[in-house]
Length: 183
Length: 100
Image (cartoon, rainbow over the protein chains, first blue to last red):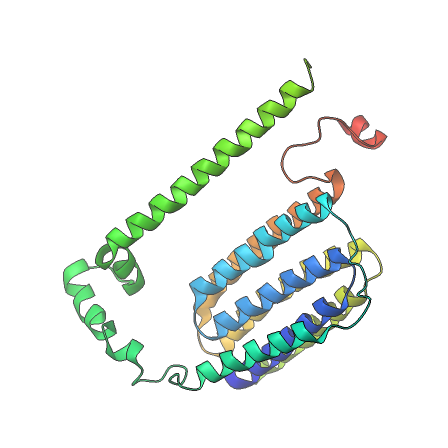
């Protein structure tokens, strides 16, 4: 049953990708890319990666659609039809796809018990979390306690980026208003 | 068996919505179909959770409903005002001026 659902979702994903390649109206392309990220979020949920799925839905269907709509407002609404079919990009994309599929051949199966993910440090975290950290969620224990320096660094990076964006945007608005004269 | 049937039905609905999104002549067809696709995603998460015996997916489905709502509001606001952030300082059409 799980395989059937996964296959259906993958077929829908491929269909959406082909539709994005065919459609020339860029609004439709933005909406279809939102559908693509919702479908991949569903795939992540079927694979039990709920947090990744939520990030995918928030960033892919939410923020990036809005950003792409803003880009469309600044540029053009319709894509120009290609004058001739160029084969080199198609060849590059197919080759990259084949290399990526070849790279997955060595990987252990999805959810395999003897994969390095399950045998390396995972059991140690599972064993030590209830006694040392006393947090019911193992992921929270790993992020907030075992790797807390790493998380602190990430939070600092995100905070600095947000601060920079806020400073840039507020400065731009003030300059524009001053340029238009007293109002 | 019942949940499998419901899942397949919702998937068929999603495919039909995608066809409308692909073919939809006007802008609003596409916005509405994206919104409906998000709603179908919420339903799909719920039924898949029940199908695989993990009903704790239901609260995640609620979060998706919130994202879908906010996203649709953002897209519609963009279509109305041609920008994302503040309301326009110079109204471009008379009916915006009247509403302010």
